[in-house]
Amino acid sequence: MKNLLSMEDLTNEEILSLVKRAIDLKKGAENKKRNDLFVANLFFENSTRTKKSFEVAEKKLNLNVIDFEVSTSSVQKGETLYDTCKTLEMIGINMLVIRHSENEYYKQLKNLKIPIINGGDGSGDHPSQCLLDIMTIYETYGKFDGLDIIIAGDIKNSRVARSNKKALTRLGAKVSFVAPEIWKDESLGEFVNFDDVIDKVDVCMLLRVQHERHTDSKEKTEFSKENYHKKYGLTEERYKRLKEGAIIMHPAPVNRDVEIADSLVESEKSCIFEQMRNGMFMRQAILEYIIEKNKI
Image 1 (cartoon, rainbow, N blue to C red):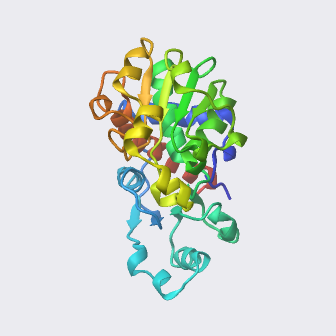
Image 2 (image 1 turned 60 degrees about the vertical axis):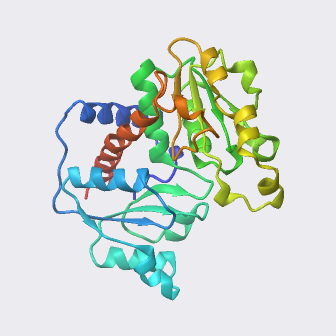
């Protein structure tokens, strides 16, 4: 079974193949349509971009999208994730896209005989977001080798930071982090001072402050959006120091005037909304890839 659970499921060659296919689709290449397949999107966490872009991608491929709402499912009666997914397999669903708050939720689904695309697991991985980020960077630079990338924000709780660090480093980029002490995860790599590097980076990637994952009382009481923006956000002053050709990224949703000044969200260097556009094309490419690899 070929799943897409983390970026470690893909070789560098497969990553680049997916990027080039998504770019071709964006340029108008014909979809590999399959009106005989059924897919269900199981989102146990709130989502706009990931869920809806998967839905649009699925419909562009003529896939039959089966509605699934956690609030009206047997999950509310105590049904396990495995039993829910196995039920969908038994009634003829061919693929599952799943987002769940539990890290590595997919380990309990190893007996499924249909492929899974991970739409995000807790603070673990987010491969489709990582791939659309990689696509956006590739569209700008046409390479990864030698690029200097900074990821700033709530690193400890970010699946985007983990996925992007793994993949971009493998592809040849230098990735470092900026975060408050309480949101650092030193196991991921080097943490630097934002103002020491802002004029050197090729990509400035900002991450949302994930209040919903903050269980430590210190995390909640010490946070001030004004203080955070001043110390760790992309202010207008920092923006002016970015070198020519540098780009700004953010997986969204954006907390304006926290991670990034409101005036910069659609600035000349910003790729934030282009990332969202790229997400739909990348998810088409992912769906095609999973269908082809599993010969379904």
